Length: 426
Ligand code: HEM
Image (cartoon, rainbow, N blue to C red; front, side, top):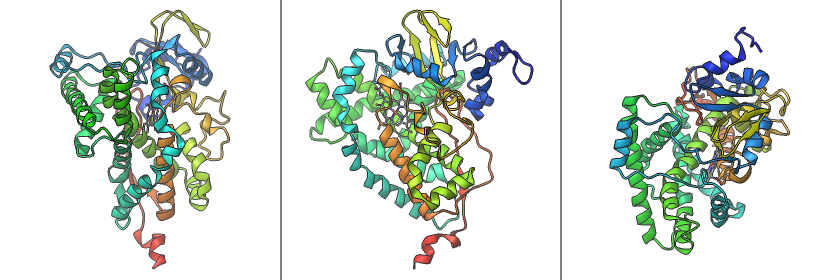
């Protein structure tokens, strides 16, 4: 098969690199050739089989036994000897959490810990999210120009996550460094020099997680999800194990807020560059929930996830050996013509937008999906009401090299404060 530029598909597969070039700019577009010509291919640069079509990705998600999630938090760039040494110095022992746990341990644990995510509990979080959002907007609404991630989209999801988990809010600045390090360590491509710095930050993050758990053990009546987890650890230590509690303490901080911050940044960028969609939701806020789904489909924050075969398997007609590592690219599945009509068109009226794979699928599907959705909805409700004349500023967008986490590093927006609707209210 030959792609548009005359380069055979096998050559495209050999060149595939998720850490630079087209994949960073637009992962769905970067794999269009694969969806059309070679939907399951081996990437020699990565050592992974890449899966790009919607149905194949869903089939992999659907079978957590044959396609184990055990490699989900592995360092995708192998650590240097120095980095391993540094981590050892911190007694680093990150292991299974929820997302990378095999059955049957995973389901027993998920069942034991899911109550906190039930809709009636989330209801109570809404006012807090709205309050935090309003305070941030109050702080910049008269300025006319702001970098939205620093001003709102980073810290609000972080505070919401810490509150939901019950983790103290006194280390916000450090947590940003830690989260970034964990993300680069797991899904990025640090240079050998960066590996050492990242290993120090990850090691400190590990120790910090241990200290927070000790503090939380003393607060026996605490209401957060991690308090609840710690109580379950005492009640059923063979299901909610000690190792799980420590590993999860570290992983969840990133899972809960980095994902949501990036998705929200992608959402504002996408809507503001599709002006009529933005104007439609300003005029009719009831369109917001489906617009959020379409943003998660078209520009999600988790663009690829991992699995590893536990026996010989067939994906999309391709035979894979036992132990094959898979990179399943949800961003590509989300723009697969075979499932979504005019898949590369952004359309907030799309009736199957919610079929997107950004939250995964099946046994491990994101437990926090309704928290993420709620935050994104509230951001849009508040911003469209108070700043309908918002626009993207002229800027170049940059993205951190990562197989999996995606969102612009910065998002500058501007508006004319003289035209703020609330100025007319007085
Ligand atoms: C799992 C994405 C927000 C907690 C996952 C998975 C993905 C994901 C792709 C793996 C799914 C699979 O293997 O099938 C996202 C995105 C978010 C988000 C895109 C925001 C837009 C959150 C939040 C929380 C959270 C806010 C918690 C407050 C979890 C947990 C799991 C998970 C606990 C593991 C579930 C399991 O393995 O059973 N998420 N997530 N996530 N997420 Fe999220």
